[in-house]
Length: 87
Image (cartoon, rainbow, N blue to C red):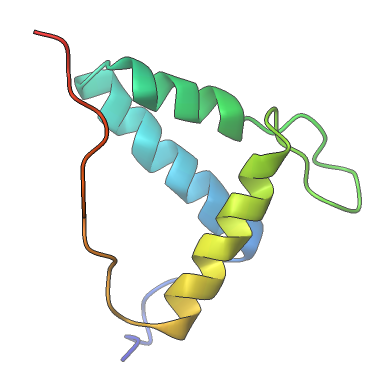
């Protein structure tokens, strides 16, 4: 249930909030996958009718995540981790 004092975000605001979240995490843990994710999330044409990011698939991936979040209150399981940090 939503608390009435919690802010409601637009899709664009939620996207930027996600970017800020990953960015602040990257500043603490500067590992390459986070940097690559941030680079692909960068908006390069906010004025177009369809949102465009540096990696064209990123906005579609974002919208799929939005639909998944709206469809279920559960977070997805971590599953198999494909990234193994270098020693």
